[in-house]
Image (cartoon, rainbow, N blue to C red; front, side):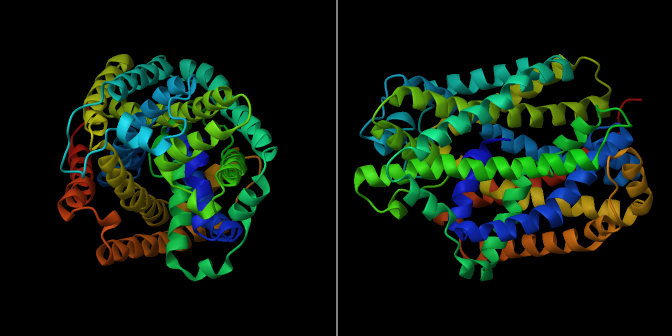
Length: 468
């Protein structure tokens, strides 16, 4: 579970057909999500290695795919930590509801001091920088002792956000206007299913939400004993993740329905995406609540933080495992500290007055042109350069229920074909219409150039000889 469940899924579902979006979403889940989840769990557990080394054990020249996955994850966690910094700051502001009555102005002008565009960096925001440093300190503490510390952390950070989300759902459903909000969220618009962008959104959401293509699942699966279950875990993880995303929609849209009711506006005028939803619209709705406004502000941002920290430290753990496997570095804490310091410094660009622009650009390119290509490469490698039947038999030998030859068909044909179409349509869309009308140079630098750098660095690391 992560921030993608809490704010990304409800908005994506609403803008792509409401209740009808569940059709492409579950098709994406069963044609790409679960097959790749089984594949990544299987690779990590079978080879007892991180992503780069697991692919290298299939063929040395494929090691770069593992580094590619970790490179994409690195860029994503670089801005993910800044979103958590926003949440830390808003958790503090929830005590006094500093934003009350001027939510958009507070977020854009007081908090971000947003500039006119990505070329105008301006100054660094000290509160956001301090939140960024605090986030990386917490990430270090969470994984400093490996699975021992991670196990203790997730005992809190997995059930707590679910509990907080249930609290928000219950509270939201008791507010006036909640039913209109839920109707807006769930009313099917089947005409949307004819649009390629809806299917693109479904596959992107599945990849982002399940952390496919990050190298995370391979790293964590490598810590499990070789006889551990695979298919049951993959199905449970995938379906529970989808359920949490769906539940989040009730928490979000019941409150948005109330906000529309309280401000006498049409709900279509109050729905917003990403940071706009979490740091403008939702706080505005909280400020309108009749009682315990500050308490529900704390609950909401505490939920975002507990969702975010799991995703953040899992990405870091995947990269650290790859570095340790490659270069045989025994001192894990030194690797974590070095990696965290470097990414904290990289993250400073997101703390500037143009930070939100760069966050948006990098997020768009990594999600659309980073994760899906890695998933495509995984399918080709396992499907055509590894014995798929043998791999499936290995998975079945340790799993509660066996997977049939449908999995071979998915990995060799269906999933790579679908992902190839998704990638091609994404490229065509980008050529036809510049993303958010940003200047071409900014999308070139923060988008295409970053994708190219990740691939080039991955190829170099894949060719390097590690320590024996």
